[in-house]
Length: 274
Image (tube, rainbow, N blue to C red; front, top):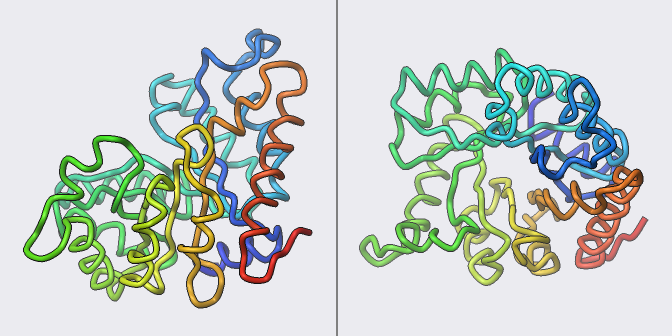
């Protein structure tokens, strides 16, 4: 099953646009888990078990695992094994390098870890993106208009009569004819999202920045849906992972996920709250 089919099926199966970011900070893992052989693994695996029927995707950020060395890599592999095959996984590592290095990044993500999608920094252009597009059953989510404050430094530069991020969208639609790709748009940019969707009517859009970063959940749905009333993955990480630091952390994560799922569903054209 390719990414698009798995993604759409997960939306329908779980009635959800929620993507949970699996970004474990060892300093914030509940104290009672610190004596585990691999606290990160235990923590994230319990989050997955508690939320897997409420999400359309998971997004582990590679930095949070790579920084832990061997134990982090082992945790990531075990967590990926724990995620149901029906739920797509996006590896967030914003790869962006020249062709032969990009090929190795793509092989690491797809051939070694077996994820369904990656985030890619397209700044270096076509030859840095093409190795990811070569995997026709996957999806490369290209950084477009990100949620961090510094995004304006370059992404909003004028390129002729348009912004840099708009030029990137046009290029992404061209690249999508070669292989599957999507866009990463910060949930902190609800007004721009409507025009981005108009420029890229059929590309999936990953929307980080809900919750701790202050993104507007309702606006993400109203401005981001494609013509099939799908096409968005609304990511929340810290607000779900750290909803509680006690024994009830997994139950609290489930409730935070369900609350976001319901908020997003209420904003759909035909409100669905099941």
